[in-house]
Length: 129
Image 1: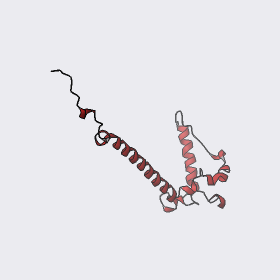
Image 2 (image 1 turned 30 degrees about the vertical axis):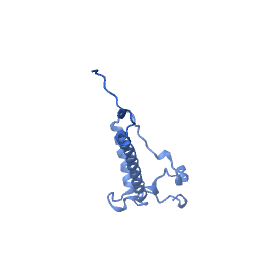
Image 3 (image 1 turned 135 degrees about the vertical axis):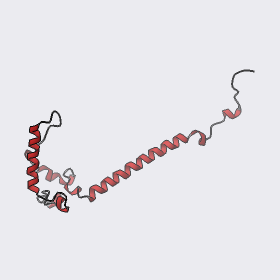
Image 4 (image 1 turned 90 degrees about the vertical axis):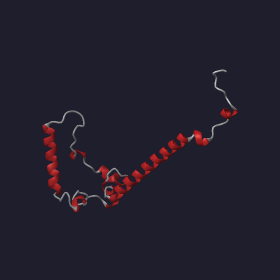
């Protein structure tokens, strides 16, 4: 009697697909599921973008190329994204913020908060809309 395992003809036959490929099916379903979730979430985001009123005021849109050129960058105040934030920067931000709040003077939680007049979009030419 030898200790070697005996190989039979049955061991040499090809393995049926239902026994060998279960992990491939799960991986395929995982990829399909992830793709469907990504498409669904992108679709919801685009619908919200269009219906929320954000699309008409988005200056990155190609429809607003002419208006984008008219933006005066001298009026923009920027803060460094690197380094320390000190009291002088905070005071400067609060001053700029308070000035902007005084310009708008709308009920911040009311329905008129995003009207074109309240956010200063009355000056957009009709061809840019």
